[in-house]
Length: 435
Image (cartoon, one colour):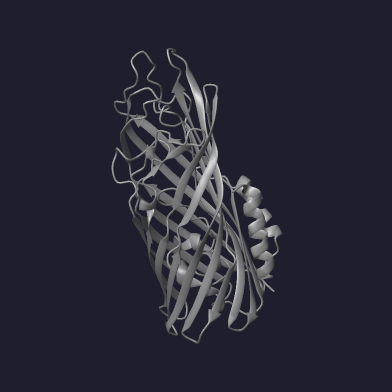
């Protein structure tokens, strides 16, 4: 099915729902070209830039906080905790990443230049996100979120020692998330969302022409729109303590594209199952000013063991790229302190486990490793109906070793052996308005 067929089906769904204008789906397609992500700031190629409010406490307990419209992404049931009326939140996150490689004994095809360390593969990015929620009745809420959920870009030099395994890699996934929430009673609220997911991928490498000493560039592309859902619940255990539970489903995609390089152009297809997630979060008011937050999140990364590309002309599989992803978890702790009536201070820490556990599974396209997030931030009220959140996160990534052979028979043999060092700084700004 082509993009036009997907878009037509999406518009029919939206018209029947009567709650969302079809232009929002067109926005999804446009935004998929705008989001730029220079280094994934969560495990694997997941992103944690869905709001600016959570950035101040390392996104700890976001499924239980429910203080603005961005709760649509983290837990749609949280919309019932917002005041009656409309709530709008607009976010801009700016990650600045550093990613470098140090060679410790790579080898390559005899007679070929070994290459260099690839330069700086990180950079700066600008990631916009938006949310809107409204009350239908005191117990019933609807909303819509537009945000990136996965994404990563690495950009090594064409003379990189690992160029036959990858030079430039770009994956961008944008999600439109219409949602609904219902307060059953003073204790339980339930929420659900429909996910419309757009994936674009562009993977580039260098290859050696047969009987030649020249390298040529290759390019593998793919894109698709897929669908999923998310469920959430909040339990007000007592006046001071709220529990949040969420589940976001896996999304199956069939990314059609082309393999180009060396004078060939092959139509291809790649099946990808984006992972599902489960999160348990808690918010506790220690007193009338101090709020304590915590969460545990599991992600089913084992849904992507490898990237397998099919040649649509001959209906045969091209050499696949083993990933070896394993399921992973995230653990976060944070706090908010109401300094005065208009200023709320924040801080938090989180540990994010990588789905990549050994040097042979790590790739130059995704040199991921376990990471620790340290965060600070604040919320400042601007009048009765507006506030701004500012958050800063520094991500410490553990040293990531690679010892990966080039197993593709179409590429020159060799081994990429060395280590990656990386870090990310993120500044997020979120403007909230109620009317």
